Image (cartoon, rainbow, N blue to C red; front, side):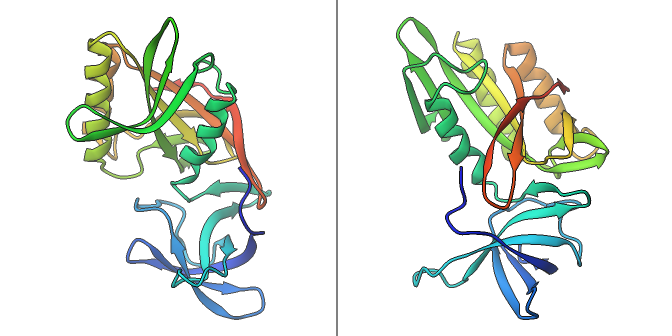
Length: 234
């Protein structure tokens, strides 16, 4: 997935009201950028971080910049836009490029199921069991090389696991896919200390037959593409 516009570097001044960030461009101008991430962004919102913004000239948008990446030492990146995983994965799923989720005839996003829920992707195919795929963006890392989910309490995430468990109990394929939007991590686990209830919900879902997959991303200021499969340890 390529960004619609070339990203430009900036310095983060502050993130506030969840969806806003004040930033300083390289020419000294201060601008406000949209933050497409409702989460805590633990470790990714410190003043002085080098970040990358996507400019736009859309007259319908109040803000002319959107925060897309954090750059870490050594040229490593984290993607902060939680909408990127689904956009990128949809194309990869349709092209049959996601190991373990290939060979399906149809990829349908945002399908209603369960109790007032929508599954990120429903995969169907002739002579194939329907596969329900929920996607989570993983951006937290507190130890070198280790990505963790979630970065704060997520009752919504626990609900998604329960819905997947119900699908598995009905005989469907149910998959929890963790997409690591960091280039400095090569393994994934659960942040049990940050949300014990989510970890418990995951254990119950796994017992019910829900599968867990984790993949990395290749991230540059030009694009985000699907990376290799990563080892996942609950």
